[in-house]
Image (cartoon, rainbow, N blue to C red; front, side, top):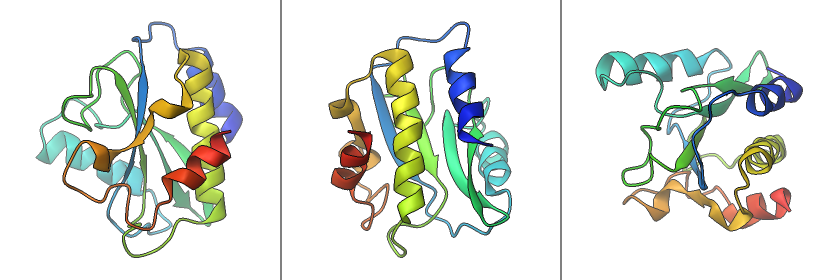
Length: 154
C-alpha cells in the first residue's frame, strides 16, 4: 500500500475514537518478503481469539518494498498494549529488531505513518512511545532507536 493510501484512509475515517498516543511494536519475527501481516491477523483472531488484528496499522516488506498495512478499524479499541488500548493507536513493524536493525526506510515510513495519525488526531510527538514502556519487553526491539524515530517525526 502506498503512503497516500494510508493517509487517505486515516483522513477519511468516519467515526474515529479520541486517540492520544501511538505505541510502536515489532512482530519479533523475521520479515519474510511475503504477506506476514495476514499471518499476524490470523494469529490474533484464531489463536488469541481477538475480534481482529490487535494493531491498527503496520509496515512490512512485500516483494522487496516496505508497504503499509491496515489493521483493526480506527473506531475500535486496540489489543496491543495493556492499559493503553483505549487511547493508543498500535503500529506494528514486521521484523525482529532485537536481532536486525531497522532500515532507513523503516524509520522514514514509520515516521510518515505516525505523522499522518498525529495530524489527524492531534497526537503530540512526545506521545509516540515504544511498547517497552508498558511491558517487560524490548519491543519494538533493542536495535530500534526511538530517538531517531522522534527526530524523523520532527
